[in-house]
Image (cartoon, rainbow, N blue to C red; front, side, top):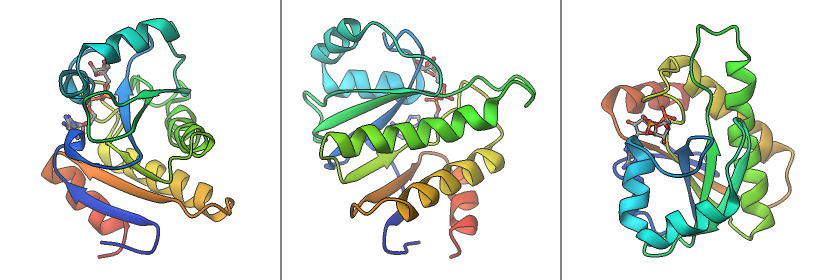
Length: 170
Ligand code: AR6
């Protein structure tokens, strides 16, 4: 499941000891369910304080905080689009989440970055299309960027894992 820069795993993103894990947040950055809830529980209450101080994040953008009690050094919070049928710029916004997260990570010396399957849970983005966009965005970023960056796609459900495995060619 690997080429040089991209790897694929299943499991809980909060357990990873990497430079940064990405959170699929909402525009308030004040926590929620899904992976966002799991990250806040594992990081502890200081994460909420740090997010509150940031004051929100528009869809398709990213913000960074420390990881606090997480094994990861940083959390990159990005806000995926809510799926509203596909004609509301959802694809471009999802692509931007990956690109902006990687850019912000590099600016903060994060070279190993783990992503959940943004927008494919509560926000309802179709999994197959979301995976194509995620992988495309990461490959585009890596191919235009000289830094030696490693991306880990962390799938929490079997269907996403199967889709990513097929797209990544193994
Ligand atoms: N580790 C890795 N992936 C996970 C974990 C985990 N611990 N828990 C869930 N996932 P979702 P969204 C997967 O719903 O669709 C929140 O309330 C999950 O299986 O977390 O972007 C926010 O505050 C799915 O594949 O995020 C927002 O309001 C993926 O993470 C809203 O949900 C994303 O599912 C964001 O919705």
